[in-house]
Amino acid sequence: MSNHTTTQAEFQDKPMWSGGRSPFDVSYGKLMMWIFLLSDAFTFSCLLVQYGAQRFSNVITPITSNWPNPASIFNHFPFLHGLHLPLLFVSVMTFILILSSVTMVLAVEAGHRNSKKEVEKFMIYTILGGFAFLGCQAWEWYTFIHEGARLYGNTFGITEQGYAHMNSLSFGDHFEWKNGDRTVGPVPFAALFFIVTGFHGFHVFSGVVINVIIYIMTVRGVFERRGHYEMIEKTGLYWHFVDLVWVFVFTFFYLI
Amino acid sequence: MEFYNKPGDFDAINYVPHTESQGTKELWKTFFILFGITIFDFIIYFVMPANGFRNFIFIFFGLVKAYYIVGAFMHLKHEKINLALIILVPTLFIMGLILGLLYEGSMLEVMKSL
Image (cartoon, rainbow over all chains, first blue to last red; front, side):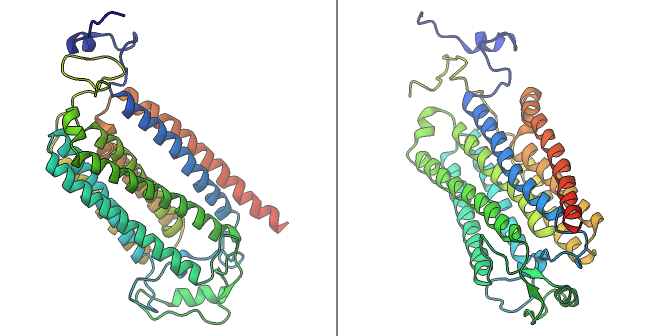
């Protein structure tokens, strides 16, 4: 091999599909991150499709099925005991995740301008958002387990009387389960809740760890010496993917 | 350090395309769209009775949110069409899997009642 180095002009003049350059016009690392995210999308699809199949084998009418109504379970909010507040807490979690996605993308934008100070600032915000989301999820799991849900069992099956009780409540009412409202319900409900949100939470956790590593590398000036902040873009892709998965978890577990 | 490209040193493995900042306008617009849709979902959840149409609305707006996250935040809208296609086309097969297995699931319920 000669020591000849290809110049930028030579490189960019190469025909797109004749080899020697990426037909996608992205760096090798970024392309591999996309391929990884595609495989991860299949992983989460498997879990959500299984949830869908279980849901469809347990529904149709509330009378024939005791599949619980998510509004009757995830209706708590920290420091507001005994109130019926369905969807509020998960909406706050969704908001936190969207917000941390925005700060991540602002860090990427600051990286394009090679502004080390701004990258550091926005990475800190993103990491804080990740921790806030994990804290919310821990509280949600704690409440759910405290009320009797387990990976291998579900005490949240809802009876006909329970449905009537639930439908009589409006947002913010005082709420307590009455005797006869609940029965043993389908196990896949609790099992898949723990598996899917747990798997998503694990992704958030690893995303936070990666963000911390990237933050430390930024502070130590690794990317400044390298001349570009592309690593921020790659971790950003992963972080947005976690947000994307949450959109579907939120839709299928809480809204529907 | 020698693994990363320096000015005047380009090859296929080390190649990192130079990217210019596109400004933050589109990002904030996307944020407000995502935020607005989440608020809209929250309102629809309480004002509409639970039925198939409401579920359709939730799934539709979920896909809209996915479009904005992948397109604007993950920047796929501005990448080469080649890259966008190898990412997006395989996910179409997931849609087929979903439709197939939801139907199988509903048949399971019929089987149980026999």
